[in-house]
Each structure stands twice: as C-alpha cells, then as structure tokens.
Image (cartoon, rainbow, N blue to C red):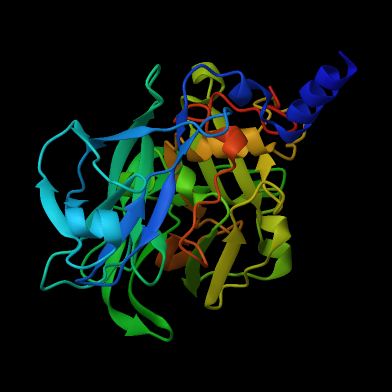
Length: 365
C-alpha cells in the first residue's frame, strides 16, 4: 500500500496522473522540418501509460500544399530507397509500416520556403481498444516559422483595433525605410485622456492565420519590428501600465475568455526602429488578466498559457505608446522556434484545446 501511495504521489507531482488513468491513448502534437522541394519521413508518436503498447495510426486530415505517401515496402522493411509508396489521397487512411508508424511527406516542385509553416495535417492513434483525439503535425522549413507576416506584397489582412472603433484598415507601404522593407503602419486619431493616460489604446490585430489552434507556439518566440514616423516618445509622454502584446482566447475557462499580456514595462520603445523577441513561456514575464479592475494581473500557469495558445481568438501588438498622437509601423511578425521540435508539455496534451491539463499548478481559475 505504501508503494502504491508513493507511485500515486509521483505521478501527481509530474503532472501525469490523469493521463496515466486515461482510457484512450494520446496522439502527440509534432513538428517536422523539410527543405523546399524535399521530403521527410515523419513518425507519428502515440502515448499510453501502459509500457509496450502497440498503436495503429490513422491520417484524419491531409496537408493542403505537400502530399503524404505510405512508405514503400522495401523502405519500410529494410530502409532502402525508394521511400515513396502509395499516395494518401483520402481520409481516414490507416498508416501501414513494418517498423513503426511512419509516413512520407513530400513537397511540390518547383518550390520555395514562405514566411510561415508549409503545412499541417492531423492523425489519431488506437491501442485496439480506444482511439485518441487528433494530434496535429506542423511541417516547417529551415526558418522554423510557424506563422508569419513579412508584408512582401500586401497588408495580409492586419487591422487596427481600439480607439472605440471595432476595427479599421492599416496602411500598407511597399517601400523601404531604414531596416523596414514593405511594412504596415497606422496613426492615432482619437484621444480619451483620464488620469494622465490615454484610455482608448489602439493595437495592430493579426489575421486569422495566426489564431485558432496554435499550441505549437509554446516554447518558441514571438518576434516583430516596430518603428515610428511621428510622435513624442519621451518618458513623460508614454502611456504606462499597459501591454505590448495581448493574446485572447474566447473559449478558455469554459467560454468565459482569458487574456494574457506581455507588459510594456518589461521592455522599452522610444519610437526608433526596434526588433522585439518575446519568449513564449509562462515564466517569461507574461501576465493574466483577472477580469476584475480591483485585482492585479498575475503570472499564468503552464495550463493557462497552453490553453490560450490552443484556442487563440486574437493576437494584438500595441501601436498606441504615447499620450498624444503618433504614427507607428510594424514589420516582420513571426512566431518561431530555434529547432523543429514540439515543446508542448505532455501534461497539457490531454485534449486538443488543452482544457484537460494536469501540469503542476493546474489552472489559475
């Protein structure tokens, strides 16, 4: 009995207790890297608390740009080329592999690496008794960018939100200015001063490609470049007690909604061109909105942070830095990682939206 109590405590401390007791296995989220015009063999990992469990994998959605193939019989059994077997053209399709659960992803030719990830597709695993919920495979290029806007040809549907207006268009500039090269900008046109601060702040708001399930952002960085054409960015004229970046999830906390922000006080901006790089970890200085003006913002838990990234409704970057009028430009926005590996903790993969999470600290609500 004492031994079993010890094991139970150990599982609880590691955040795996509910996963260990789960009836269904897990199909883990995965990142795969491939060069332009190339191919990559991708293993589809399943997880189960029972050591030695054998899995069957099923492709449940297809990539939109590249193609998926079963491995050829000779490659599957002996590791000899050619790798390419039968193309997977419909779902659901069971993965057939003699030595594991592997498929081949192939890029088209001709090909080039874009600003963001190449493709995404989903799969499930089964232990013969129960089937997992779908896991997502994200295929990236050499830059390991998941979602990005470089504004090379247009504004990419970014808008301005705030200033008591639902949304308004940004201005696209197809030229260079210093280190900026094809970028967007907006100008403050409304002031609502109270207590020395502008109460109606405006933000650059990202298009839908940055939102939805983006759990893969976890453990990477958010990078972007800001600059200003006009405005008084002296210390006495800056808005205080505000957030440089805001991430909002409307479905989090059982549809009550959760906002996580990176405080402006954790960095600085004086109007000159500056590139920001913010770690996508809950310990990097992010704060959670208590949704109560009487309470202070608090450090989010790991479960809070992954849940927000797994159901993003909006991504906003501050443009309204001063108490007066200003023009601010934005360029090269990207969520990326240093290496092509998934950093989503196992304890947060109990459900695709991370609402089932057993990481240490749980949820803060």
